[in-house]
Length: 338
Image (tube, rainbow, N blue to C red; front, side):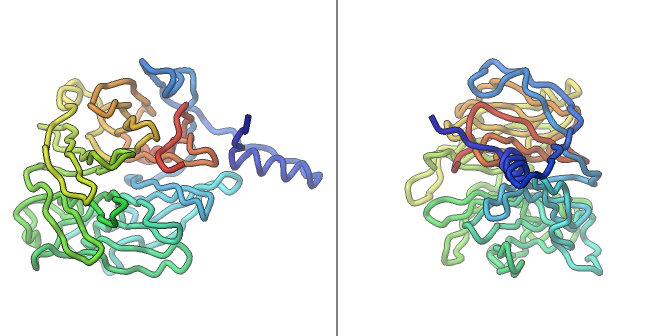
């Protein structure tokens, strides 16, 4: 049987082989886990508070080339990095709008990061109202989209990459002061879009009040979108054809009653497990959802959680941007793509 070693374990073994002592950091533990499926996560698993003091942490992505997680502080206009053995560091600043900041935004930074390929990430940027492709090493950026039919995008928020090359992304008004009421808002809706490799854009849905997190199922047959509007907070699914055409919109889970009960956090970013289980941020923390929306558990750090991603050497570390800090726990399932 083959066992995967965590990054931290590899560092410890390397240090020991070199005759050096290695003292692993001990992180504060927070929160609690409840679950009906111990094959997905154990309720006894600890949640580590990895640190940070951010305005609103968001957008984590595991970057294999760096052996690290990158994540954003949107109001802080910064992309941060966490790596075992190194801890937290600033990776890029500014991450979005370049000072002097435009008057229209109080949320100038990048938001939900995802991988494009081994050398690039996709960066939805609130401050510049642009969807970028960015080289991990040179930091060079290429504009992927900044308008739809000649009208400037609101503030690209999150994205999902289809094997056809299509990029699905959401465009709520969160990067604009006053949001829908901001006079610089050119689109009269908040959309879910599909961006083709040739630059052509298709509007998938213009009826979601606050389209936010977006992700594809492992077989790419289903697209999921989180709606973070408190009055209608829910998760929406669509069928996706092999060529990327979208149909059959339906609501699979709702969360507005949990918000009314006082739980913190709207439906936001999501991570996809290899078996199709959805780890979806929402009221109370990270909700564990079946592909059809059945609620299977909850990972709570004690704060609202904006986004989540799988990472680590074996793909079973779950990183969570937990409002002001970064958190991590272990799952019994791997993330999709590991």
